Length: 151
Image 1 (cartoon, rainbow, N blue to C red):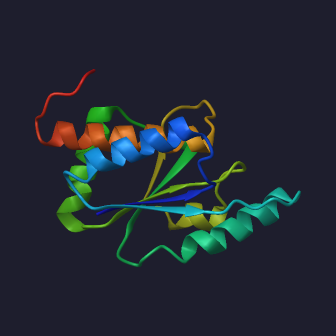
Image 2: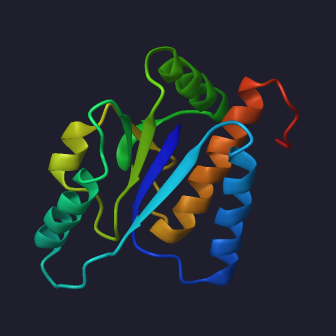
């Protein structure tokens, strides 16, 4: 099972459509759950991250293999990502991805991470990043199953 915990909602229709499409494709391979948490709107960035961390922790199970999405994380190829997911499934059936809000993840959440993943040193809007993550998860399953997918 893949679970994605993400802070912030998708307001743009084209992003919601993309999430819906990739979700449908992924469900051919595994169960998928997307948990969308409300972002905080106060002016204290550290307090925001702390409040968001409390919400995130409510959805983490002790048996989850946690992958946090962080700029400081490790950059890997799509093929390596596919192998990573496949290897995790050898010992754990639940993979939880965590996408932070506009100010990133708290240190507390980062410390819970089993693997810190970065797609790039660039910063992306977290709403767009959700689509990017889903696309890479879908691509990973296509690779695992030796199915063609555009490069």
